[in-house]
Amino acid sequence: MKISGFSFVRNGFDYGVPFLEAIQSILPICDEFIMVVGDSADGTREAVQNLHSPKIKIIDTIWNMNLREGGKIFAEQTNIGLDAVSGDWAFHIQADEVIHENDVLKIKNAIEQNHHEQKVEGFILPFYHFWGGYNYIRNSRRIHLHEVRIFRTVLGVRSYRDSQGFRKFISIENYIHQKEKGKKLQVKKIDAPIFHYNGIRPPQDFRKKAEQMGVFYQSEEKVQQELNEREYHWDKIDRVAPFKGTHPAVMQPKVDAQNWEYVYRPEKSVWKIKDRIMQPIEDVLGFKIGEYKNYKLLK
Image 1 (cartoon, rainbow, N blue to C red):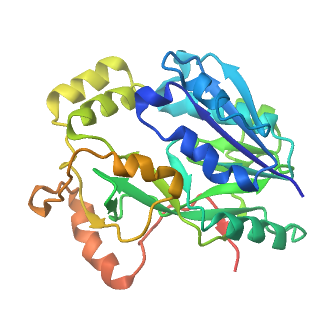
Image 2: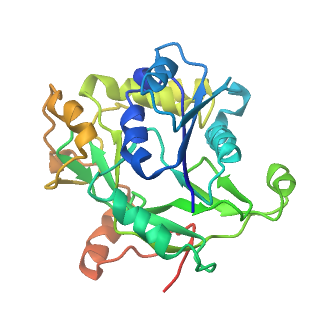
Image 3: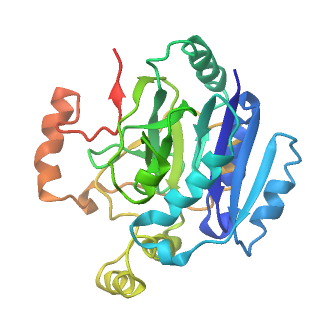
């Protein structure tokens, strides 16, 4: 049984994502790691190369900015990496996601134990969505709780939508020409959280992050219009809770280097009306009503 890790990144330092830590966190259980590196000007490629691991294979790409809107470019880059893997199982980790060292063997064992169970097509992992600083995680109904990150490579799997998850397709041609929506993967859950660091920014960088990412989902004109109409700040969030666990060891230098303090102020919380109504109900029930699940969870 062979496990292939894969990811993609472009200007990782400029975007402030822990792409090197992402690679290093799952490298111990991967037989190979495919890193798709877009045309970067901040030393991203050199940094990946300087990890000096024989497991890592770099694929150089030039991003087609005509595919920006809707996050299509992210799906394209994900599929480039997926097409290069040679393992029985593919483990996708995004450039702002890290796995704790205490969980990597748990993940490997789960894959091994289900390798011959053909009905198990993949695995979902839970998420910790960090916000503001390294000591808070977002915990409202607006975040996704689980996603497919591990799956068999023989299923005709493609990145779904903007690379958030995956589905299997009858043919790549059907996928390219959008002739089918794809089928959800049958998965099991591994209780090994993904540490999602996308919301870690000093307060002055939140507008920059919104501008950088916004152009991959809508036109530059629309992004600038929204930026001018809204104040992008870390206080503009619904709800967070203190994080009481430990961070992955590879992230500790970044955690220790945080030179700003984030304090959650509930009085500044921003909620959509529906979420403000539904959140207390779901807190009592203990589950998310009408949760979107891009997978079929096996019992």
